[in-house]
Length: 148
Length: 275
Image (cartoon, rainbow over all chains, first blue to last red; front, side, top):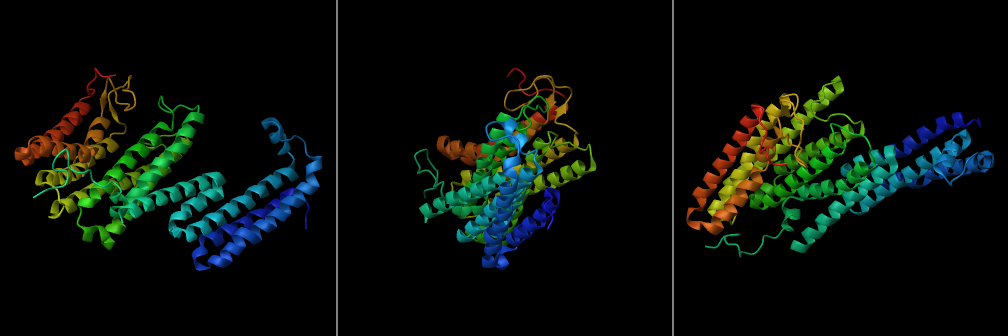
């Protein structure tokens, strides 16, 4: 296997996409999906991340103490790839959590699809959308419960 | 016979009923309100200017307006026959309205992101196509007031005083009947001003020195608030004449909408001495 970050990058996309596709199709096989998207693929990506950090961290410029240093850190291809894999792993994990939580709270899968798309593209924005959706439905449920 | 809301001292209607009478509209209204939080944050961060204002001003206004619209529909839903509210066709219709409203606000925020116009934007074919689709969505979401108005109108068992019953049904129907021609003309006008505007009213943004078609649009859309409130005051203050007062109030309101529309068409500002 190539050790070039640019070549490794090509492997990460399809892996993440596979996880997200499984989430979209979650209602057909909830348990299998959960295993793939909240364990297998995030764990694989995490192994990659950890390895990248072990290999490249010591040689990377910059640091965490200023935006300029964080930007310098990401000029290093190995560390930048690690950062990218970090996004992919945790965004997918959050996507799996959204799917799982929606199922447990009987939120229709159709309603969370936009949240999953947002999480896939813009992580925290999708988390926020799902949180708002959940809050709206919970507020409505409280109103209904109070009338009944 | 006693009616709901027949006197100022009548028990307040149970607002929580909105959640069971119109579950989709209620949840959507809460969601639109929650959406104001990230929009306000974006407005605070964004230093760009679009047509003299923050690009986020328009999505914020629409979240307010559509949130108020859907929560109002959720409130009036209690006056529809229960069988209608539970019917499959009504549920599919509300689902379509919810999709239309979501489509509108998603496009408004997308346009703000790229700092471009959400309305009247025909600069590239994609925007022209989106503008057309948004027009379809706008008609669909406005038609909810017509469908509800007709349903309330035909309902013999609203528990409302006849005048208030008339006011609610009429207000809902008028929102559609008045908004569609005004907003239809507005959308084909290429812009909301008639003439050149140099000064705007705060918050509303209405021109102080040119015709502004949004005035009539705003009033038309709020018929579903104005006429029922007039009905409420009529049954409280002049119960014997209430039905007639409702008809007169509704006719006057329609006349006001037509007047502001004609005024804007002639390039005249609405109440230019304010602001």
